[in-house]
Image 1: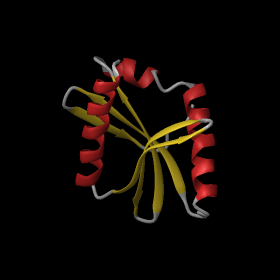
Image 2: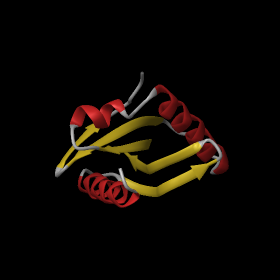
Image 3: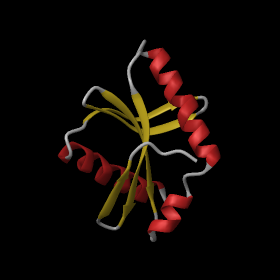
Length: 109
């Protein structure tokens, strides 16, 4: 997928989160371990969100690999340490296929 298509999916995900009561704190946070697409807060819980987009739902979900999840977790810990945070948190995914968006909370493999 091109970077432009990825940006479009992230923009759709951002709007989705705002409409569902999330306070988006940061987008595209980078560390030496990887990137977090969106960091948001809702009901006192910090959400580290991976945005995936593809032509088919199954393909997008399959792109959340064990390796990608490990990078997401390491990067989240860097973010929390950098910002001196001690709060509840969860790892989520937003799957964007065309105009359909599915929020998958607490992803694990």
